[in-house]
Amino acid sequence: MTPSSAPAPATPAGQPARKPFGWSLGQKALLLAAVAYGVWSLSGMGVSSERLASGWAQGARFLGSLFPPELGKMDELWQGIKETLQIAVLATALGLVLSLPVGLMSAANLTPAPLRMAGRTLIAACRALHPVISAILFVKAVGFGPLAGILALVVATVGFVGKLFADAIEEISPKPIEAMRATGASFANVVLFGVLPQVTSRFVGFATYQLDSNLRNSTMVGIVGAGGIGGALFSAFLRYEYSFVCTILATVITIIVAGELLVNAMRKALDV
Image 1 (cartoon, rainbow, N blue to C red):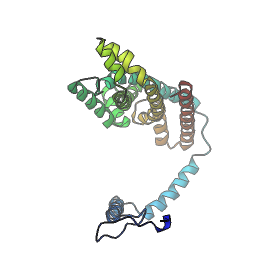
Image 2 (cartoon, helix red, strand yellow):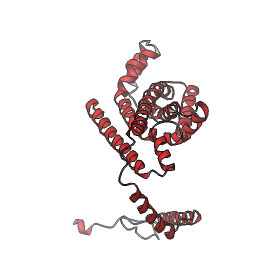
Image 3 (cartoon, rainbow, N blue to C red):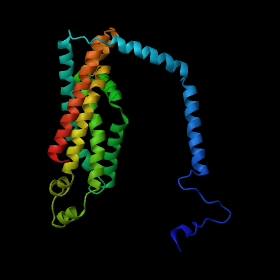
Image 4 (cartoon, rainbow, N blue to C red):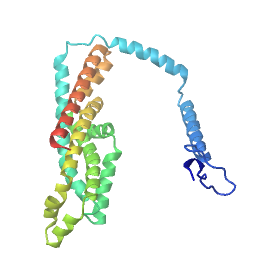
C-alpha cells in the first residue's frame, strides 16, 4: 500500500473528522468570550477612538517640548544619579544576603513543613508588594530619602531572588545530601558542601538580573520620595521643565543600557 492510499485516521462514530490545525468549537467560544470581555472592559473604562486620536496629538506636542535638552543643571542631575546607583547597589547586596537564609528556609527538601510554610509566606508577602507601594510604606515609616528606597528594593529582592533560590534548591540532586547526612554531617555542612555548590551558578545569575532590575526600580521609587533621580524627575514635571525632563530620561536610559551591558559581561565572565 502506498503512502497516498493510506486510510484516514479513524474518528468516533457520528463525528466529523477534525481538520489539521483547526480550532474546536470550545476554542472558538473561548476566543469569542475573550474578545467580548476586552471590548466590554474598554467601553466601561471610557476608552474610545476619539481619546486615542487626541492622545496622539497631545503626545506629539509633549515630545516636541522635550527638545532641546537642558544641560545647565548637571549638579542636580549628578546628585540624583549618584543616589540612584547607591540605592540600587546597596539594596541588591542587602537583599541577596537576606535571600540566602529565606531561600534555604523555603526549600521543601531541606526544612520541615512549618518552617517551609513560614518562608514561603514571607516570600509571597514580599512579592505581593510592588516596589512603589513598598516605598510609600517605608517613606511613611522612616521618612523621605534614600533609606526608604533601599528598604523597598530589599523587600523586592527578597521576594524575587528568595523564591527562585528556593525553587533551585528543590531541583538539585538529592544524592550528595543523602550521602553527607549518612556520614553524620551537620546541617551547616550539608548546606555549604552539598547544596550551595549545586546552585551557586544559578544564584549568581539571579543576583545579576536583580541588580539590573533594581537599577530600573530605583528610578521609580524616587518619584514617591524614596530618594534617587526619580525625585528630580517628578520635580521637573511639576515645574514644567520638560527640557530637563528630557535630560534626565536620556541619562536614565543610558545608565540602564550600560548596566545591562555590564551585567551581560559579568554573566559571560562567570559563565552563568
